[in-house]
Length: 408
Image 1: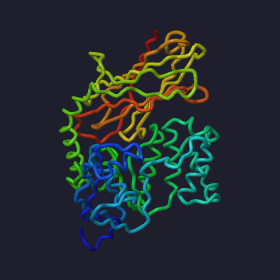
Image 2: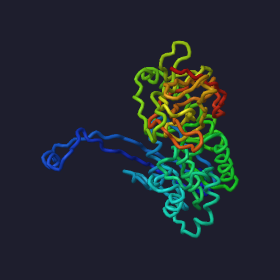
Image 3: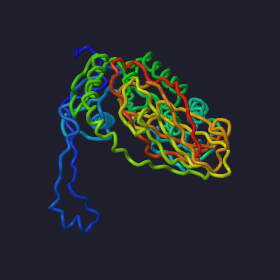
Image 4: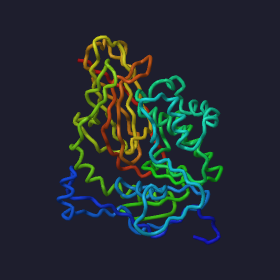
């Protein structure tokens, strides 16, 4: 890179590894006895990483899970320290890596706004001035006096993101935070990042969403197996990343039937989520690997209390980090179900036509009160599926769908 260009971030010869102990020491006694016997595996998270990011550049970093992307971001943010090599940053750097860190679930949304603002360095007067803008951007005006523990995960991320973007900085480091909510909120996020591009802010974006990377990034680094495999043109990086995903198709297929058990959190009485899975249209069996033009069916089952006549069911499509990309909603009541739902077990099938670009996705579900919006039950871990086969990934999601409701 030319010496005449202004460099915001310079990374030279970075190496980072972690020690993984072979056995766990669960007590002080066992640690003392086995002090000289402990052995480790060395995990090489990053090896000989070098690149430069110019001031005003929107720089993307992509790679499969476990490639070293998050470790690299934490090194840039100063959370980790490299084993060797140098990182030079010219300007104030603000990491948006784990949105909502510092939130207190027992406090209201309002109190958490001021708490999170204080962590970003704002005083109370400054927070008073920007409070209305934060709430309006997050679209949570009706919920600010509720405790945060009653918020859905998407609501929490929207609030955290709305606070985080108030920080004044020269360099932003973003980890999977471009799309956090429904389509309307996503447009707000995109408008914000378009503004950053116009203002020539330096941005580092790590994402699995190649449509977002191609939309915003001027250059992209592809990281795979702890090494940088490519740095350059966005389209070329997208092709390389797609090929890496194709190579892992066989592994993904083998894992199709090794799904994790669904875990749910029952917030209040009324409705309980019993199951959540993606299934094959023809065989009706559980499935995790889909082609681009294939119908995706998400099956959700609920147990409704005897005194509940209507419930709002939502499913969210998330990136692997759990950040919501889009959500689908359906009110389940006597009209939509063809009869009373009180006291019944209900199966809902969301049928979505060929909608996703290549990549891995996480589906989560929540059942809530129609009037208050408060959750009855929500899935904690969700279920994963993979889409492999698109050549052109310059889109995010098409939300045409139908809902089939089956009662017991």
